[in-house]
Structures are given as structure tokens and as C-alpha cells.
Image 1 (tube, rainbow, N blue to C red):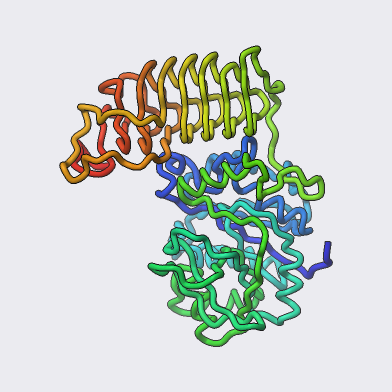
Image 2 (cartoon, rainbow, N blue to C red):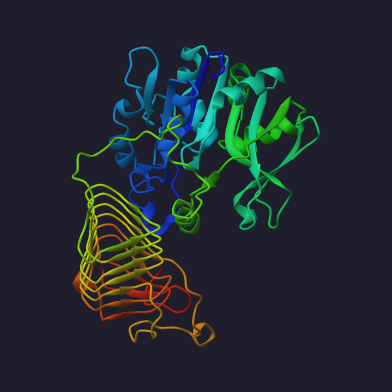
Length: 438
């Protein structure tokens, strides 16, 4: 590990992600369960510990209780210490100032006293909703060698959804000439990884400018590039995933059950730390079949599991089949039920014989316009926390069962592909006329 100068780490972990649908309504993306036993933010915090960084502030705002409860005092990462350690920075009412963070730059500005008190040479600003491994000490070394005001990490541009990323243009020396934020089409081979190393004085000066805007990228970073400040790109070639959508969250979990996973969770020199629950070992019944899956402690498998991720306390009943799915804590999948390409949140009950994620006829309770009366492509079925799926119910692909739906909320035993079921009992088609707002 490289010796590094004083660094303060600030983790942006308070954003709301509507693209996560029911998964993100009760928690911020950073607190999403991941990989059978972790939360997404565990990767950022573990990277800090392995990089020798132990002064960390976590900026939270939206639905923070799950994240706060997970982090606690930082003991799982050896960050419960008198000198340094971890701090949870929730917005609060101040005299003559608003209390809510208006954006990422405003969140940093409202915590400028934390930055000033740290007397750090550099500020490392990280996003808490990314899955990756990285030695930040090497990033800081690069940052210092190039006498940079800002060093931003770049990753290989994803092949889809270019509108979700900022494309970085740099010369052969790594000097950044432009950051094209969320274009309509692909803007090059490298995108910003939302990992930034600032010279502390430069960041504070920018945040204090009169009329400074609330967004870190558009109101701080892009003006720095336009004004020819020393902004450099640091390429990261390892695994990196933004899990801010249902699809990206699902694909990142499925990466872990590939025959050759691109992310190694078993490296003894770079473990991912997390609070661990005291549960009994996983149990496999006499008729159980499990292949290419992650099965966590406390789980009981009596059916068949293929290419799936099971969290602690999950029970797969006799004859049940779970394929290409993510099943979170303490969910019960009844005898003879089946899941296919599904994400099931915590403490869900899947009734006996229910079929989730299977193509079926359009339910009579769903109104669909003529233009949309085609069979949709199979998609991910998402079931919100604490819901109960009645026995023998058939739920089509791309359906959404909202948080806390009960048996009486289902008007029938067929839920069409792309439909939404809410606790009120209404069912809506995702594409077309509905009986209420989707």
C-alpha cells in the first residue's frame, strides 16, 4: 500500500433512484442488498479501508434509516475509532440556510465545516451506489504526480444506455478537455466513474463562489474543465458497475454467478467487509438441486436453484424452482412455486404453485390499448418488500408488485406482463391505458 498524504473521503449516498422502482422506495441505492450478504456501499467502504483511508464522511438524505442501521458506528470496517473513523452527515436545520441538500455540490457546501476541520490536502468524493474494487492510494499518487486540481476516474464506456453517463475526452497525457454529460448517443470510449480526487483548497474555493450551483458535475467540474484548470483522467480497468437501475442491479448480481465471475469476492487480500448476521449454516434438503448460485447462511433449499442469488434466511420449498433470480432476506417460496428472472425483496411470501416471471395471457383486469396489445419482450419481475403472492397466481414478465401488497390486493390469479399491482388493489398496465397512474 502506497503512503499517501492527508485525505478526507466524502461518500455521496443520499440520492433517490426512481429507476430502481420498488427496490428504491424505502432505501437509498447505496443500501441495496447485494451479492447474497452485502450492501452496495460495502464496496466503497472496503476500498477505503484497504487503501489506508480512515477519515470518512457519508452524506445521506433520502430514506436514510436502512443505510444508517447498516453502517452503525463503522465497526465492520474497523472504522469505530477515536482518531478519524466514520461520520454520518445528515442534513439539518441551520440558521439562514436550507436544511435539505439541493444537489451533490450543495451537499458538500453544507458540510464545508467538515472539510475545513479535516485540514486535508485532498478530498476524495465518491459515490456510494457503485460496485467495484479500487486502490485509492494509487489514484492519489497519480493525482499528486500530475499536480492536478481534480483527477476523475474513467471507466470503459458501457455499450448501452449512453444517456446515463458522462463521456470524458482527454489527450495523450490524460489532460481532460471535455466532459460530455449524458448525451443521447455514445460519446467515446471512456465515461466518468463518479470517483473524484480534488485538491481541497480548489474544491472549497469553487463551492464558495457566489451563485454556485447545486450540482457537482455541471456547476463545479465542467466549469473547471472549461476554465483550463488542471483536470486529469485516471483510467480504471477493473470491474465497475453503476447499480442505479433495476436492469443494472440485476446484471451486476448475475455477474457473480457466471462460470468465470468478473468480480472476485474471494480475494483474501481485498475482502469486502460487511456486518454479519448470526445465522445457522445453509441447509439443502434431500431433493434439493443447486447450481451456479450464491446461497447465503440461514437459507434452506428443498427445491431447485439455478443461476440465482439467495440472501440469508430464504426458504425454497419442495418442488419449487428458482432460476436467474435474486431473492432477499427471509423470503419464503412455497412448494411447487417458480421464479424466473425475478428480483424479490425482503420478507416476501410466494404462495404454493405461484409462477413469477412466466409469460401468460393478458389478465382481464388490465386495460390495454390496441397499439399496445402485443406480447412484450420478457423482462424482470420485481416484487416489493413484505408482499404476499397468493397460491397458484401467475405473474408475467416485467411486472411490478409494489411494497406491502397482500393477497386481497390481487383481483385475479393472472397478472399480465408489464402490469403493476399496488396495495390499493388496483392493477395497471405499464404501457397503455390504466385504471390509475402507474
